[in-house]
Image (cartoon, rainbow, N blue to C red; front, side, top):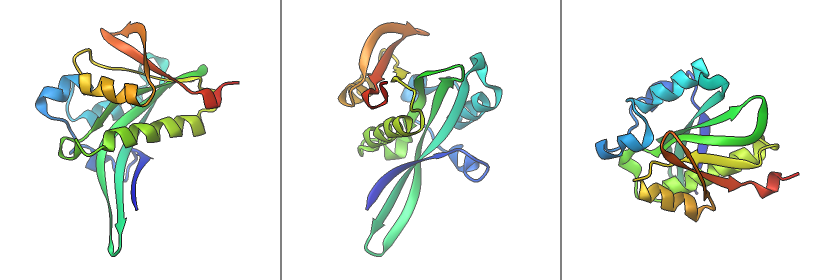
Length: 168
């Protein structure tokens, strides 16, 4: 069994998340600060813009014959307006530089889509922004059904995935 799971960042795993990061040339695509985990945790604590910020750790689990284990491979944060559950945002999504290029990003993003469909039943869309020069991320999101909306937020194009399973 080879599985990707998402877990909230808590007092048990927050220190381990501090070691995660991206290659220097990718940093501007994910966050303006390092370690990225501190930015996620600060937003969860402070709640900028009156939004609810929920940081998650991404784990890769291996269970083959007699070999088992898990590895922390990435982070992301779900953001939502507590006054309106129509859309949920995926922010600061990344796979650690040591684990990139193995398909984990696509599988982790699919896990976030499923999490939103399962736990945010009123959500009509999952939205995100992508740095305009991050063509790899744009291709990843399009492959999962995200569509550019034509909107921009802080100079980045907005992509949305319609959650038809959640449509009323």
